[in-house]
Image (cartoon, rainbow, N blue to C red; front, side, top):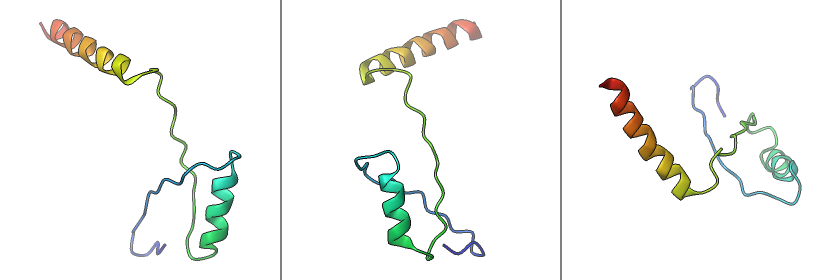
Length: 68
């Protein structure tokens, strides 16, 4: 990664057996050719896609009510 060019890549790697196994494997594979950083993505607070769609519909209704 060249920091002078301002180019950044965001990649996702498949999980391994342990929490840090994929991270360690990525660092070994890239060596000194890149500067790797972790970015934790939080889990969704909603269990299923149906629940998420339902909450989105509810939010739209509440937004309309609040604007009125």
